[in-house]
Image (cartoon, rainbow, N blue to C red; front, side, top):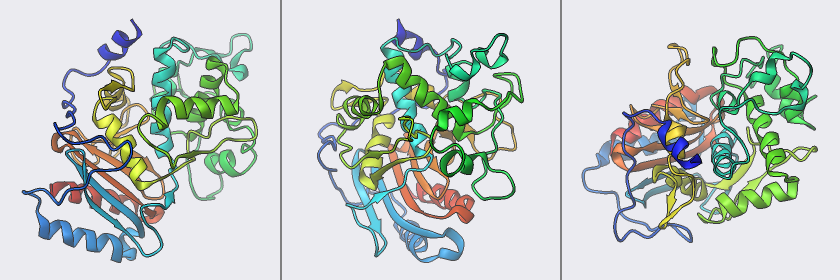
Length: 352
């Protein structure tokens, strides 16, 4: 019944997700490599790749770039300081990994997507926050106050959450914020809400920090071969699912492939059936001025309609383009150039 509920919630017009081509091995151990496919605009692709690693005034610093098409690694480049064994900061790509963890807990019956989520800070009599559901949190429509700024411009709840007053107990810091809007009525991107979710998952699954990390590895990381993954926790034992899971570029690409394949990996349904569609189903109240759409802890349409992506604030991206069976992974330091990097990735996708 849980799987049916997940399967039925996605929009009917989603682009179908491609299956792994026959004869292409799954990259649990290592990626199968192939040359750039026929039909790729090689001149444009090579020019963009050169720009990506040599134009810091437009794109910042690029550390790693991967392209996977048809389940095979067809392009891989690093700067002089990084290689295939280097681990990279996830920043908010960890939010998309948190989405996977929600799916596991939901399929086990530990949480209810559409019921109010138990949060200690909201347990007082007549607290309006007690009506906030897990689905509203995962779609960033909780209504909770949060200033998602990454520079100290007078107020930044994100900086306080991760490095200041909230860093020892990130879930409490975020959950203690007041409501500014009715739950479900207003979209506001918030790292705080992800950490509320992570604590709630651990509580529902009755797991301490060690148990939660083991759960992550058993359910998500180990089955798809993400051996480099290093999730981080705060002093209260909460997974910092908003921001902190280090991986190699190749392992981030494996996570992308899991979602591009609809949660299937080597013949096994790793994610609950339909959960990848939940990630890419649009959240209706995202304002029209937002340049990208938003699903459920995944961004939408960065590389054209139907694409979806895990985005990190400083230039980290896992971009999935189902129509082309394409994954692009990019890491770097590009906080001041992220719009340019997104345009650059969209242009790269156009080459395929």
